[in-house]
Length: 157
Image (cartoon, rainbow, N blue to C red; front, side, top):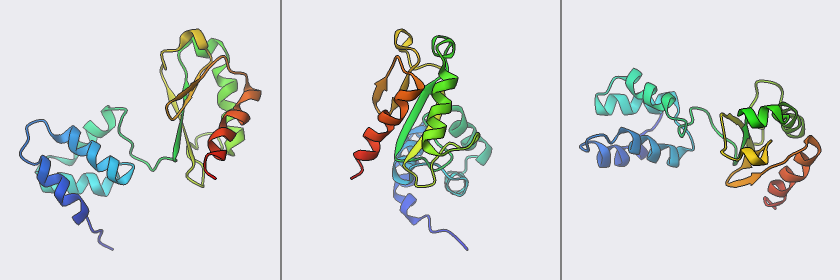
């Protein structure tokens, strides 16, 4: 079954002639779809005449781009040194357990939460730290995770 990419044509036409416009184009497409699928990346490649490997390379190089669907709430867990030595692994285990995720899974089946490990959140004095959307939570203990996530679940109602 062939996909309809006509919704992308306007974005591509706006960025087509601009030098260095690939990143802003990918950002605009991600804003539209929530992530960059392989078929979309191939369509952009075909339309702009840029090799698909080059576009995929840009999309995988920059951490702002997502190649898989993401949950409504992004939970970033810091894995930096300060967090690591302050039990980031215990915090991650509590996150996965509370969200019902198995090792290797990142997004809940209801598409409400996606867990992402990051190298550093820049809050070393608050270690261990997670960030849910744009809110930072520090000096965590595994037993605190359920309450934090419930705040975001409750906001859904």
